[in-house]
Image (cartoon, rainbow, N blue to C red; front, side, top):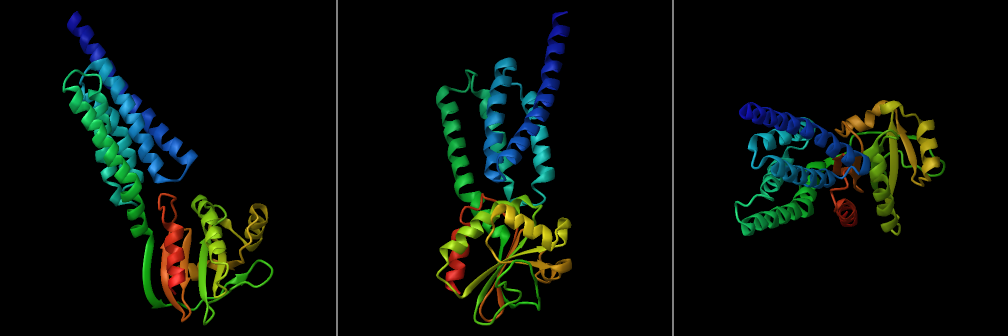
Length: 291
């Protein structure tokens, strides 16, 4: 009878671990998406939840590796399905999350020694600091920015805002095009950085900025104008009917930035935005100042 009761408790713990892992995974992704698009938050939230939950599992069932693995499985599955196909360089996150769960499982156990457990936590902290401060920002910069020196395709935008609006590249001037969507959260998150960039370079009369919407997501010139009025956007606004220029520059998503130099050559194309790329504005400023 005692053996059967112990088996039932063991199975409850195992199944509970899998269910708890599913709930924790939804919590980790949900909190990250609601609070910030910064991918570092996803990692930090995962480390905290995995470590604390594994500590609880260790206190309940000792070093129950199967329960720990089942708890870890839903999060890794979601991460592998939603994140890694687009950002494969995030693979170290799986290792670091596993390390957090492993250390949490051992935290309240008498073996190994306290020195080893504390050393493991210090190592996790050091690796996490490197991952968030150095690795993620650098890899995001490499993934999003594409430098070149090819001739720009022929294009022409439809002006939307009043006043002077750059509708094509002007010889002798640098043009920064921000392909934008009023429905696009990364575009909206990126916009303050572009505004600060423009402010930093306001003395450079040879640099022009333009925010360009397309038909994507149901955007229209009127919708872009209304968005700019609501958000107090002061940039020149333009529209790219059918997204012809967006496609011509080799872009497939939003936001998309194109920098064209004085001679009509495309010096930078980038697609996407995430605030984990901490040097985004400084790098773009440096590029524009060098042209």
